[in-house]
Length: 467
Ligand SMILES: [Ca+2]
Figure 1 (cartoon, rainbow, N blue to C red):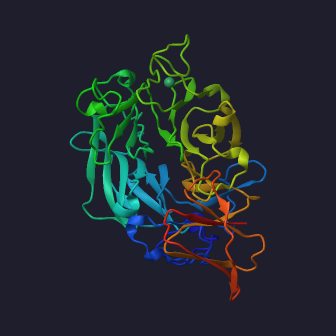
Figure 2: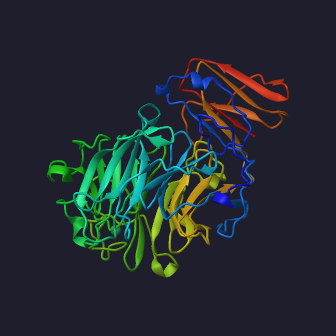
């Protein structure tokens, strides 16, 4: 199968680049009339996908299913959803690929010149909090000039490609020696600062030093300048004032919880322990003095909130995602959970912060998972490096959230009759948790379609259709 996704119905071309479109236009609203600055949102999610069964699919719990989203990705390293629903995938070779309308676009969004040997290459992507207006996309990659080092650059999007010549380097990190331990994850925090995870580059003493930016979490403004409230701003010098936390070995991935801003950092261990650490300004996570919890306890170091041994089947923690989607699809017990994967163990587990950080198995036989993301519509996506695929896990018995839209001057929602079982809900903020209330709006059936129209100038209201 070309791209491995031919059985998935492709949608008509549209500006919204909706992800999970069923091929039928259920939503028709006035959002195209909104000013770009309002960041219009049109996200749809339907149960009508019919993804291919594949031998590379994971084993998932009863009630769930695993299906192919897009194949043919070469040596992927990480992925991120754009605010408009497109999924961007980093290939180690420097190409940033786009999955749009359930298909992998043949033309990369961008290609950077990178050293992709060993663990180097294009490793991370993030979208500016103001992406809907400014179209800024950030990537982390191993630059080759003037010496080999990791760099964070900003590009400006123009549809599914970048504006030519728009690259702006906003952080050039220390020159590299070894090829391994590059970190590479980048995400914006709730404070709209850009957080950058860096590895210690095979020199463990780097992790403790405030004289370089390796083995750290860095925090910078989106233009590359350094916030003056950084924890080591007055004690470190120059660019090292971007250090936000230290004592990390190879924090290949981290995640920030929607709604709370809580950060969990996955630190890949050496011989014994894989770690999940709570992100705290100024924290020292102990490497190389400790791998896993410090024994005996050392108050100078912050222990992981969870660790698992290589003896338990894993050896490479990669990928973390909080389950707080706009429209939760998994059962309630999963809300607020933190999913994490292990690339060599081939599993996905979940940690429940509301239950003493208890960890449960979730998926197994996963083909080299290197990243996890939760879609706005509530599916869990994983990037399988082993099979070169993006796959998704959904709960088959979920009451589907059929779509989410944002109120403009007027919103009209269409969906096929009959209307039985459908209900409209509204909320004042996008969240996967509570806050959605039923809306008593008259539904009108016209030409076999249900239609409901709401008129309001309140752009802070969101609506979703659920069944
Ligand atoms: Ca540690």
